[in-house]
Image 1 (spheres, rainbow, N blue to C red):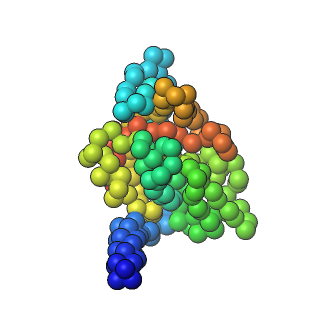
Image 2 (cartoon, rainbow, N blue to C red):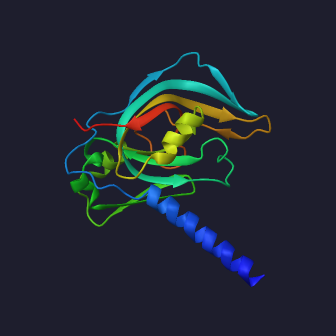
Image 3 (cartoon, helix red, strand yellow):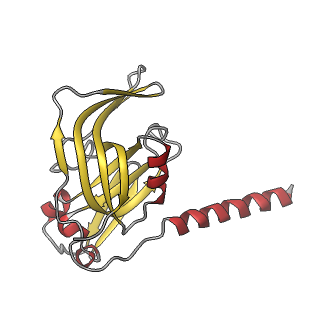
Length: 200
C-alpha cells in the first residue's frame, strides 16, 4: 500500500514538474511589444453555437495581439469544460517588461489580480491595457495551441466574444469593453486561432 502511495506522489510530482516546464515564463526584451488595442466589431445579430448542452451566442468579432502576463488552467470549476484556461493579457505599456517589472500579477478563481508598491504607469492605464480572458477553444487544434501558450509570450488571437448559457439557468456573459473592472469585466472568447506573434 505504501509503495502505491509513494508511486502516486511521484507521478503527481512528475506531472506537476512537466506542467511547470511547459508553461515556464519567457523573458522578452524591454519595450512595448503589443502597441495596438484589441479590435472589436460588435454584432447586431449574433450566431448561435453549441458545446454539448451549452449554447454560445456571438456578441462581437474579436482580434488582438498581446503579451501573456499570466495563465491559469482550470479543470474542476463550473466553466472548465467550456473554457479550460484563462489568459491575463496586456497591450500598450502593459506589454513592456520595464513596466511589468514593477507589477505583481496573479490569477485565481477566474480573476486576474495585480499589485504595485508604486505605480509605474497610471492606474487607469493598467486597467484599460490589460484583461483576464476566458478561452474557449474552437476545436482540438486550437486547444493544443492554447496548451502551449507561455507567460511572457507575445500571441495573436482571433475569434468572437460570446455569451454562454445552459438550460438549467447557468449563464456566463462576456465583457464588451476594456474599460470595466471587477466582477463581470472578463472577456469570454471563442478562439478560432492563436499563434505566436512577432514584435513590431
